[in-house]
Length: 422
Ligand SMILES: *Cc1c(COP(=O)(O)O)cnc(C)c1O
Image (cartoon, rainbow, N blue to C red; front, side, top):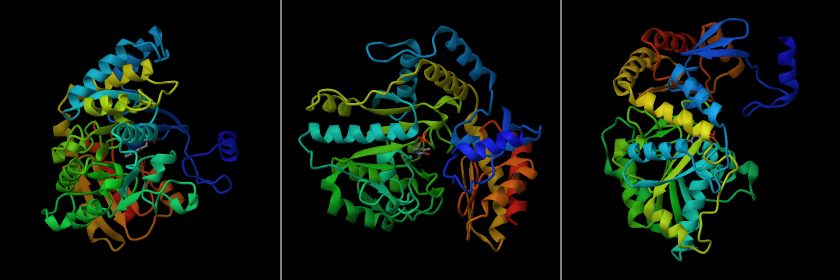
């Protein structure tokens, strides 16, 4: 065990870590249901769904069976000149479930790539219409869209560390984070700066990219759906494509299958990832409308210019199909509502604590925002010692458990957060 940790420490990068001063890592040997099993035998209740992904928990028999069945037939085959049932079945499902009009599907390997693909689609669309001067993107401050180059260029410029890549990173436009809270009364004044922005820069934009209603890794902020409705109207009016990044919010996390539904919005392009395979493997999809797909195909290239090696991977499509069928087979809406109530009831006492700036819950997401950043190494150990897996970042301690978590397990999570934040 010491060897394993020492080797890891000496040779392996973890997300956003230092090679010389890495934070401690915890060896996990197995995972089942809503539990992670450490190498030393301790079991932790999972409060993270492995970053929005494991909505049905771990090692779900239906998902592992779907993968085993597919792997015995074929794990992968190229998508150039070839198609297969799992890819077609998944496209049919995604078209049926996503907001109306999203009739064309592009498969890729990860969320960040799905965002790159969306941005390329928007640029090729504008070029094909003779609008090559529309080559800028706009995004919200506090947003997160992935770690690859162009995805990073539309992440929040401060938390996304744009100054670090100054001069190399493309420069796009950022609009203030929506101030209107998810649950506050709507005030038309909340879109004044957005209106002004479109008047000034609307003509330069290929697309506006947003995380609908829930901003995730950029600050866990929940904004009013009316803001999104208004943004969609502005995009339509200015011939700017609306890209909905549902990579974190998709597949039930916010209480609706897709967060766009809260605002009744059908985007021009939608990015899916994370929970698409129920957290079983990395896979993503970028959906668009027939109109956008056809206009791209009339452009200079005559084709959409992207084609990853593992595009449409059959194993990933098979488990995504099983994941969606599993989700639709039970009353997850009711469960998410119950999780939301229990998160609110369980975390609300934090509101009175001196170090706490805000507590907010939406769907199966509960956030305690502190005034000061947490001491990661210390707080991580406290959570593990309390028997739960919760991984805060910056000033945010948050829970987004698998949707199948039991009341008792969720109680362990909220109690641990309350105790440790106290
Ligand atoms: C995680 C995430 C991404 C990036 O997905 P990866 O699979 O990590 O590349 C993009 N957008 C949002 C909203 C995300 O939460």
